[in-house]
Length: 126
Image (cartoon, rainbow, N blue to C red):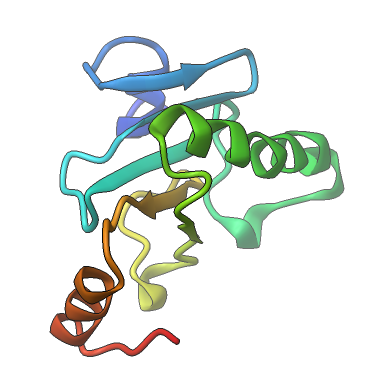
């Protein structure tokens, strides 16, 4: 963990967060600036700056995070309706906080709402 990292501070309990799930390897909490009706961040407890910093030794933690995704989606009530996983890697892709994190987003009640959001963001998802 690093002293300056806001996510490390959340893990240590120094900064409040609306935590959905936590264990010895990962923490999941609601994003303070959601881009969807449901928007949580899944982070490893170990400070890893980005996907580009991953090494073989991180394999078990990253695998666990991916496998736990469906359980987190179930807790949030979006497993059946669908959700997206997004990882921004480095500044050019929109990474702002340099502690690896996976955005789990969903909660659109109707296809119309989903398409409207994507049109607003100048993207098209089929």
